[in-house]
Image (cartoon, rainbow, N blue to C red; front, side, top):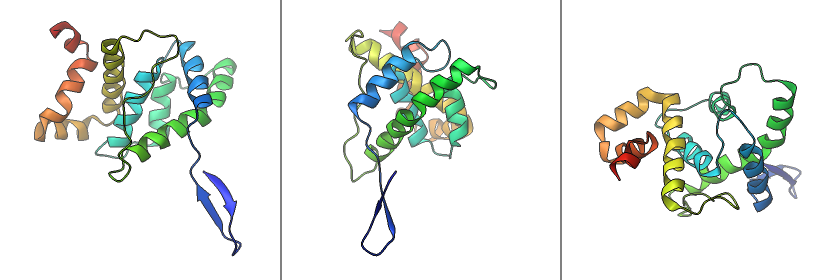
Length: 167
């Protein structure tokens, strides 16, 4: 959030915007990672599931999953994480805002520049990210799968690579 003073001395908070520069930073940063999330479509699917989760997933839990569950990152990882943290949180906030019913702006996220433009690959990677995030709050997602299987089962199948085998 960006703070701006108002006429009465109160501070008004405006959400910061996820920029093309942020997308470039994340794309380059995640491409060199060996653990955790490594592709922008996967990150988009992951953050979409976090935003849609029937239960609340603490930020620390999903950030740890993004970074690859490393409990004791080395100095190089800490530098990389600190560089990616701001753009990552802005991307999360953008996805969360886009899912609001009044926004009507949600769309499957960007492909990496220079990456394969194969929509099947992008869909599979997005679904894999979504599926990984559902594992952080499995009890709530299992309940949703039992009550409305048509909502999550296709994404889970594709995210588990079973969808690719079916094609």
